[in-house]
Length: 541
View 1 (cartoon, rainbow, N blue to C red):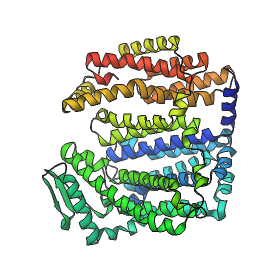
View 2 (view 1 turned 60 degrees about the vertical axis):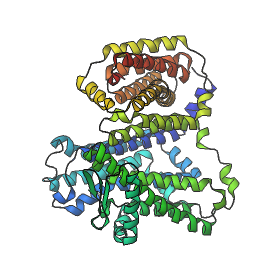
View 3 (view 1 turned 90 degrees about the horizontal axis):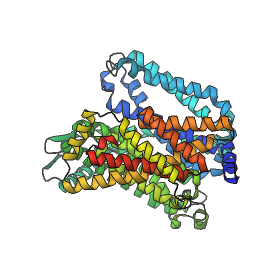
View 4 (view 1 turned 90 degrees about the vertical axis):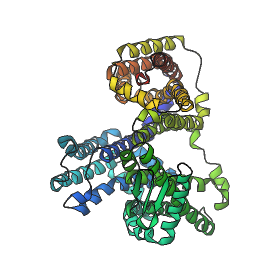
């Protein structure tokens, strides 16, 4: 369908902001995958190697990349006009060589794990560290210049007397600053206050809580942890302080700096301390009642950096909304909110979906038990973009609904019963109290039937397929193929999911309405969910 709306979409794509957003999303998925696999499946510590310093530096690259990405986001927030030119400058064909370099680097990073299965990495670290270092360098350089050409980066970092260089450089050394701050944890006032707060919080959930502040040990029942310097949460103070500094430098002309420094910095440090208390308490409760391995791995250093980065970004977002801190509050109040951006409505809920899925994989031995977290995340993101979603044409599409029901039936018939997976989920659900089980089932149905179809169709058909479809048969085939393959890769069952993605794409193309694809997807998932309820096998979904 060629109309003014589709023409406008193609024009937006030609300006390349959507390409940049998609690349950043790909980089986030890559980073998250590396964190999960190396957190849970690579079982060696740097102390087991003959190059402790090198090992720790390589491991710190994940935290550095996370902080740099977040700082990049704050820069974009502060300098939208500069970034608008930056992300629209490079044409995709100019980045092919850099894409290849990035993928080669990524392959090198994964190579040691794939070649050894995660065994004997410590013994052969003197070999593998060079592979990891080279892969990290190639992936980083290729990724940067795949996003934008070197000359575009030079123009960007020259903004405001090279202030972006300063911000990104400080972001890169935040882990080192955190290491320098580790002796702060040994101050009796901080340790005693932290342990007392964790102890009282745990006592609310379990009266058998015990603590030995002198030995840095605290636990519940048979599970106890030793809180070393590296796990103390001091990195949270460093991270939050750095982002308060970034925001102050970038918005120095807009802020009442006296009010800002006297209120925001102390509050940021206080919030980081409180978050650390909650993190330690959650770690111990998970270790005592669910899985010790899950507690140690799921809430170890990478998760800590992730949580504190989210805290820092949340803090600067709140600061942006507090009129008392700004010289001209109306300037920020009149800025268009992200909720009014159609592209954000198509992408961000899916990012939340993926991120919530990663969290459930990290925090639950049976990830399906964490599905309510995914539902809450999706519901929140959908609510933010409710005006955009409400404005879509929602007239009933009988053809799309019929096609969806056919896909749902095919999905059920093609399902291969995995007795181990089904038994594992059934055993996990059996441990829930009746009220919790009912709540889990209700949220699972709401997420599966309503939220997931909406979010996935907005992304795969509304964003990916629509952006690739530039008109003409060839481009339309490319758009349908790419969106279908991505959809199939996400769902694991490639054949059934690929067929479903193809049908949903054709449903959308029929009238040019993503809402038709949403209805078709809802019909398919509703039939599958009904079958899962009837057979009492939620692994079918």
